[in-house]
Image 1: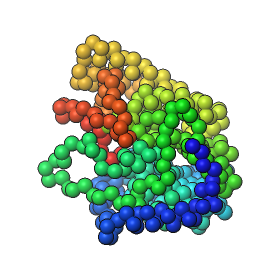
Image 2: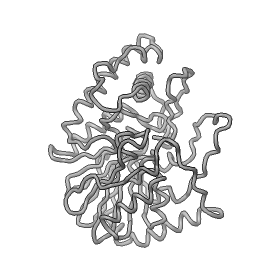
Image 3: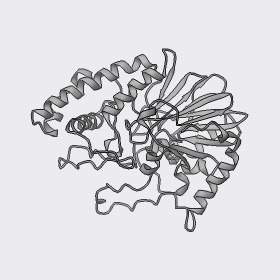
Image 4: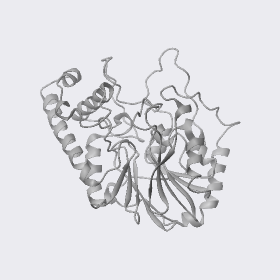
Length: 368
């Protein structure tokens, strides 16, 4: 299904609807804001314009060295299209920095924030959702992403003494949703005409997560490719939340069809790239999946695969290749080779390994 921006003509009304939906969905006052998470020095996070592209498209990102989950730059990248029609944002970074993000957006435009497109559900990309919805933004995403923002029915028991889960703020949930259809892969689910730009919102196959989207700015020749590609640390297919290494390969192949040699590809983390930069990444995934499948076919356990040092030929190619990133990626290779459960409402019911050293594949949404 393709919506051509009647979204613009009706977006002011939709903004009011968005505000009404979250307000009416709440029983009593809004959920209290949770305490800031401890993995970042939030008071030291600086949101700034990383790069301007043409006259009205910009990339905003956090600063390095203050966020242990993303030491290269705090949180996920935010794309901002601005002009006389208002502001369109792709992603909203972490909850703790929403005011800083808004102030940075305001260095580009004082126009109303009309549309917020979520590329995937991790909180370093959706944490600011509720705040920007309350500024009037209509949130748009895959239906699976909306499900991923809701409590996880596959979650195991919480550890003794762990704080209670915070209730979901209805304002954080997408209001406009769409689905991935393999028959129309690579085609826009929604097209927005805004500020002289044509913005294609393209639903993706389960790759980084189960509800991913990429966002193509046609005239600028820019694609926001979210997190199925990264060159800081090893790849991350969040399998418990619908991700898949094979899906990441499909996503990379799709980029070859949707981009040309000059298309700027914007990942959520790491450096900005072009499609030629995806080739060695793809080759690595194919090589490592092949080697892992042979080990699994020979009856090797996860511990055996972890001990096989499969990543040695690729060590040192990217920054951020720490022990946690290495173990996580090797575990993902192992589970992919064993065969993944199906995606249901954006998630998979993954096995929970007994080994203390192995990361649980159903990753927490509290810290990404």
